[in-house]
Length: 361
Ligand code: ADP
Ligand code: MG
Image 1 (cartoon, helix red, strand yellow):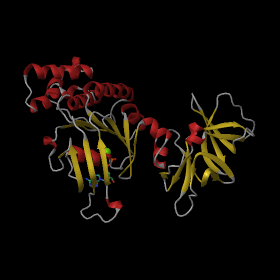
Image 2 (cartoon, rainbow, N blue to C red; image 1 turned 90 degrees about the vertical axis):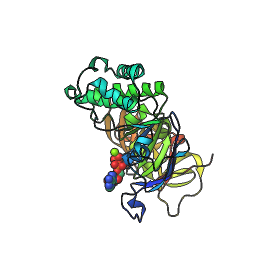
Image 3 (cartoon, rainbow, N blue to C red; image 1 turned 180 degrees about the vertical axis):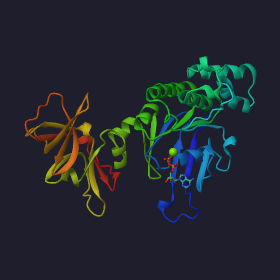
Image 4 (spheres, protein in one colour; image 1 turned 45 degrees about the vertical axis):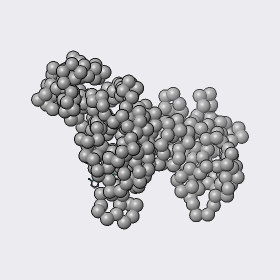
């Protein structure tokens, strides 16, 4: 088990990086606490696999250091790092039985006899593989193979951390839910540091206690799911997490007021006049922007479309000609396309060049 420190860690696949754009991973410092259940979330190409492979030792970083429990492992190969890694596609030996596949990582570490047998059966039980123990790899479905891959990652009791790189991508959707909650339960039972890479927000938010959001080679926010939802540190996080994502509108901000078009929106915090060079925007999620009848005291908007999502209704509206999404309360009936928008001031955030600006209480 380990706490993993990344110190000024960066990586460029080009030999002589000249600008930020040449880095797949821009230099960063970050700590993964011992025992944490982390999700590493971001769109395809943002650098997740690069970061994971540096932690596991498959890739040597071009800059910075990796420490496990304070010990520098930057130059150590994977085998010497005591890490288990589960990849997107199953790694299963076709000619071996399921039992032998699961036993393999343990035999490699010198485990034999009753302790080996007990551990294999324990992990097989946790993953519902007990009935398949004597079947050969080649006779299994893709789903079963990926479960065995997960089992091979989880089987060693002595690992410092388990790294999962989009392990459920090729799994059938209904089995996904089941395996995801299994992984969460396994995390509780095994007390291991787990880092789970995904581009899927639902996977990240259900698995992790802490989500590390990456964008364009950078970590843009580390937080609990609720923090990412209620206080996105970057407009990217607001867009990427939630559905539909956070509304972002160009604004002029001073004191406790934001001006959007000709309208004033109240803010919970005070801000110094934020003009100058930065691009100033406000962000508010549709969940905190509620539609009311015209004249109800909020900001006047024009309703363009209603989307019935089953449990909730989302309205596409225009505020001074700017499109945004808002929640339609169950009991609201709209007459015509004029409506009023009520915003929760505590949930209206201010961004300068995409980054959250802390206001004053
Ligand atoms: P993710 O896992 O988030 O999809 P990757 O870490 O695989 O992202 O890739 C990050 C960036 O680095 C991408 O722009 C990708 O094209 C580039 N990249 C990844 N692997 C290599 C490589 N072996 N050589 C050169 N560029 C690479
Ligand atoms: Mg990847």
